Length: 193
Image 1 (cartoon, rainbow, N blue to C red):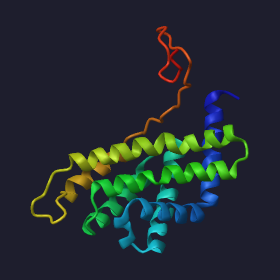
Image 2 (image 1 turned 90 degrees about the horizontal axis):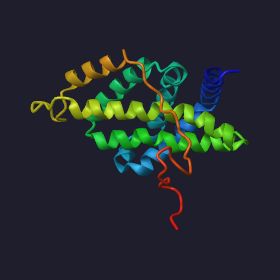
Image 3 (image 1 turned 120 degrees about the vertical axis):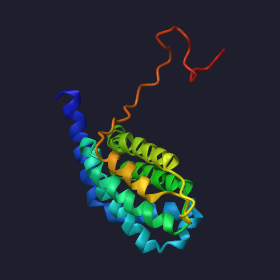
Image 4 (image 1 turned 135 degrees about the vertical axis):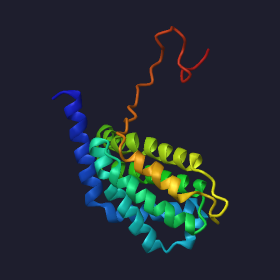
């Protein structure tokens, strides 16, 4: 089986496992979010877990095929609701990043072979991190609206998120950390004598 076929199989298996346990993962993510971002303690934990479950489900096409439409539409709705509740960009970014360690822990608890667990985890990490970065950039570039108590022009935000759905997301592909580079210089991770 070639590398692309192996990666597609890993994506399908990763999505299957997360889908199968998404309620448990969503509750763990909700706890992580409320721990990391105290502002989220204002949100009912059951409702937050339900939102996290929705994010996990909406991320399936992104992980499988780089299709961000469902996730971007959900983020649009969640962002509008959270902005109205006094949340800020920092709250969103940290909350979104809370999915990453929970998913890593899930795969390493579920899969006994560390290499396979890491491969499956990378299928999520490789698309979620660029997605969060892109959405954060959209927030930062949204026009400031002095008439809106939240400050963000939600019309320009929605427009930018809609454009996001038409894009394909490039995956982050992990590279091997080698002892020596091609240039002959030592790796920053090697011991200097």
